[in-house]
Image (cartoon, rainbow, N blue to C red; front, top):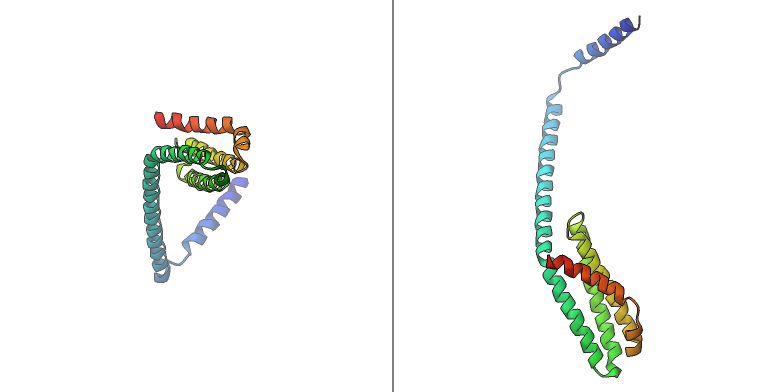
Amino acid sequence: MPAKILFLLLALTLSGCASLPPPSTATAGAAAQSTTLANRNAETAQQRLAAVAAQRGEAERQFCPNWQQALDNARSNSVGCAQIAVSEQATCWQAVSQWAQEESRYFHALAPIFQGGDYAPPATQAARFFDLAQGWAITCQDGQKACTAASGHQQMDHSKNAVNQFCRR
């Protein structure tokens, strides 16, 4: 009995399909337009993917040289602030803090480009280094003793060493 009911239901369903009218010219035109649009969107997506891959490749090639230059500038700026007149040091450290913030933003901006790749962890460490450097420079605005006593040196060294190790490979 259940097999008969299933057969009848199947026959009714199939007979309903057979009685559908053929697609109209408008329907066929709309389908063709949809196909064309889908192909165009797929091509655009492929072009964007290629552009992102090129951007990622260039960012990877520039990562270590940019890191090294930023690190050299950080050293130079810090030494420069420590060597100028005490009355000018607060202004100097404020400028270093703003510069470190810009470097941090740069390395943070690389995160979505490097996401899931080998460069993601060192980019995160580079950003962290400059986040810490910014805070350290702010502390140094309060004078040499505050600068020397500031915490975070170990964390800065850890981040710096991680990036340097990556760039030496």
